[in-house]
Image (cartoon, rainbow over all chains, first blue to last red; front, side):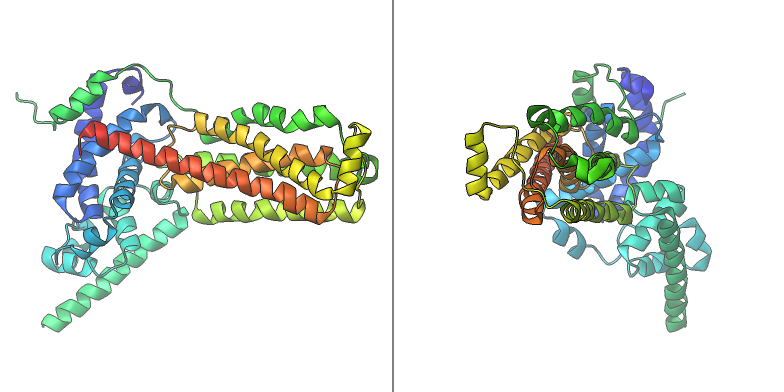
Length: 173
Length: 241
């Protein structure tokens, strides 16, 4: 990032290559639709470029860019008043990644179904920590909450997911 | 071997390649807030240099004159520090801390006002021509307007400066970040203004000085909102989405 701030185009390409896939999936999760995520992804990297001077090397690049992606999504939602359409038009099975922690608990289809019923706050904290590997301190910085609250949201999310999966599996049996 | 790493789209690369001038990394929030101190002190002290400290500063004592203002100034810088954190995507402080600081700011002002009034219910004259003193005596509203408008203007200068420094801020809630900068500016100005203003009555201190703090808060929120929207729309225009 420091090389990029110094004016290196190759450094930007390296950052893009390293972060593109993760940021795209995060945006897909936030927006619920991958076609919007593509636009938002481009917007995120463009905002990153415009605001590259606002980056301080004391911060990790990854949470900074993910935080920026969240910012772009929220601004986009506010500007376009898409909140209702983004969330109401979500298909039955939104594009949630399946957590590695949850894989042994049920099929991907079951996990996605159950995750759709958890609170969005819990799902976001869970995914940021378990799926994208951010520490609870980093999650806290991105969401504007304490590290303890981030930990609580993620672990409550996993617990609720477990309960939902058990209920679903029992109902099917 | 073929490079399979993802490549940025052509349009994005074009937009990036157009402007690759080197930039200086932003300082950390605390350093950024501390950088504001000299200017905030200078603007807040203008009124002190113009009309001097209040007549009853001996009655109030150094703690209630300078100490209370120093406390307000520290809260003001803390608000700017929190706002600077709000502007970093991965560096946001817990919401509780933001709300606590927002609640602490008016509490400090009210507490200082009541303490000052209970120690010295002063309504003294100023170091200004006798004619002006007479107008102030006959119509105390004039003093209220003078303090309100004067400290709003001084606070406005600080808010505009903050807006300039934080124009690239990446706040998720730009209006909140702007309001925090505005409240910080208003509080910093009030810290200096109250040492010069000879009126201790709560209606004057809270009505006129408090209104000025609220006005700078609103101004900050509006500027924050404007900058946030502008940044976003500029991004959309250049990305063509």
